Image 1 (cartoon, rainbow, N blue to C red):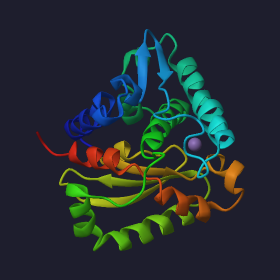
Image 2 (cartoon, rainbow, N blue to C red; image 1 turned 30 degrees about the horizontal axis):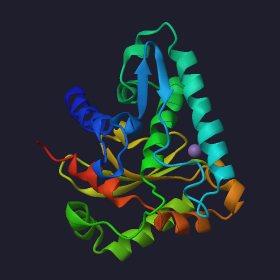
Image 3 (spheres, rainbow, N blue to C red; image 1 turned 120 degrees about the horizontal axis):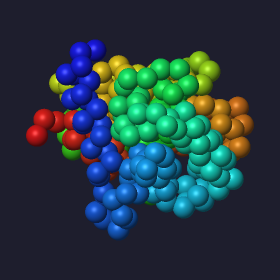
Length: 235
Ligand code: MN
C-alpha cells in the first residue's frame, strides 16, 4: 500500500474515535477505540451494560469477553509499547505499521471496541440510507448480503473476524480475516464486523457458531454501521 493511501485510510478510520450517537446521551469518549493517557492505552467502556445484550449474549459471556479477553489485549499492548515511541501513536497507526505481537494486541483492542459498537440491545432490522443502497449495488439485495455474511462467518476456519469493508470508491466486500486481522492493513475501511473466535460465543452457544451468527444478525447496531460507511465519503 502506498503511504499516502494508508494515511487517508487511517485518517478516515480515526474518525471513529470522535463519533458520538447524539440520541443516546453518552459522552463522546465512550466510542473511542481507546483513550490514551500518558503512555497507556485504556479500554473504552462498553456502550451498554454487560447484561444488556441478553439473552443473545449473557452477562457471563460478556464478562469473560469484555472483562477478561479484551482487557488482556490492552494489558499486553501497554506492556509492549512501554517506553517506546508507539506509546504515543494512534492505535490505527500501530495496526497499519506493525506486525507480530504488537500488531496482534493493537488490532485485537481496536477490533473488539468496534465489535461492541456493531451491536445494540435494541439492534436489528436492516441497513438503510446510503449503506442500504451500497449493499444493494454490491450484493444485489439485502437478503443476499445477509446470506453471504452468515455463510462467510460460519466457514472462517479457526479464529478470526468477518468484516464488511469499503474501498476508496465506496464499494463493499466481505473480508474474512484470520486471528487479529483488520481491513486497515488491506487498504479498506471497516464498516461492520463479527468476532468468530470461540471465546466470543462459547459460554452461551458452546460449539454452535452458526446459531451465534444468526442471533448476531438480529442485534446489529445499524445506525453505527451506517455512520461508519457515511464517514468513508470524501468531505
Ligand atoms: Mn473476541
